[in-house]
Length: 323
Ligand code: SF4
Image (cartoon, rainbow, N blue to C red; front, side):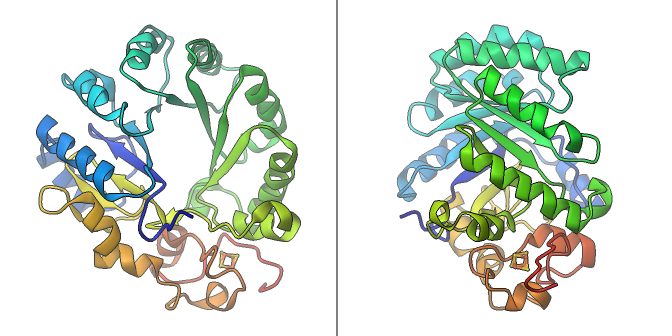
């Protein structure tokens, strides 16, 4: 069985400067100054991942126009035959369809596309690209950010996911309640809907940024749950930025280390930042005494962004047992 303290399940790796929000001005300035990892440095990280983890994680390549890196084909050619590899197109365009055959020949197995509203021009182009991904025999993974705007469309989007042949649907819950404009109760009701849909759907549905989904699935579908542990920061998930800083999550501004000074496996398993985030003992408030503190533990990113405290209770959780 996969031990998430030892082996990550998903590594999001920005090979070029990424487009994610970064909360800290200091780090934004550092990001601007630092050089992207070289081909040799990237190869060393790939070798480390292949040789040190028992279960190979899925590596999702991302970053602004990542495929335009001069050495992108070389990197993919090295990585894809030995690690489950995917590319995330944060701003998918139809022109990407022309690249699919080449990526497939290099061994890429999955493509992540972001789809919010299929009725816009951009949404229609994304659906056309999604169909091209499936036509190429690649795994199609769709990401949708859950907001008050997308909320009413989720059932329609679910039908669309099935009709285009998506293998998985990732629903992103912003870790800032203010930015997402979703309160804890709406978040709970949405996750209940997701759990009920996922229980009978062939689609793999994965909420991101909402570890309390684990509690909801355990309560509603104990037979399906089988003692699973929610993926969250440093526990199954890691994010590498373009100059080699390894973070426990995309929006948590505490790097566990730098790949120019340490190996990825060492940072993931041994760095004080990663180890501390996996430790359930300091959890405070409702997360501290919740029955699910070991299998959920709350979003540490949301706790930090909403309260400034890493171990505070997750304010996005509306847990009737602890409310
Ligand atoms: S109270 Fe905390 S540990 Fe319990 S389900 Fe909610 S987020 Fe998870």
